[in-house]
Length: 103
Image 1 (spheres, rainbow, N blue to C red):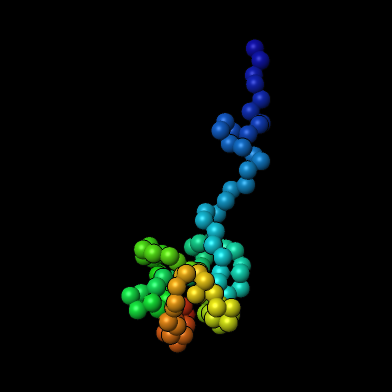
Image 2 (image 1 turned 135 degrees about the horizontal axis):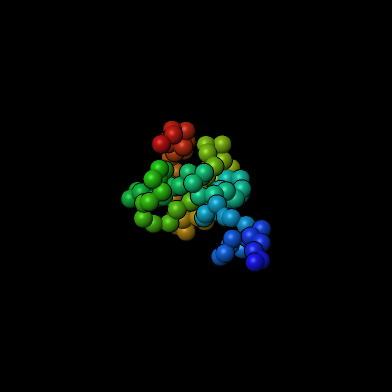
């Protein structure tokens, strides 16, 4: 009686594929790519101002920042206008405070 070796990969698993952490997004400020859950999602409100979407479920186009440190770089690069593909009214104090608060 011969037994088959089970030292190989489990059925249905491909050992050459890396496990991916899920959706990856790019920070507007620094350009670093990170998993979506680690970034702060911003969406435009009815006044065309970016606001933090803590649940990451608001409808519409989203833009992502690592945190308040990348906000100034995003403003300098004019990244909000490009990301949202329209004119954006920036209230930096409110936006920076929203990014500092943890949800």
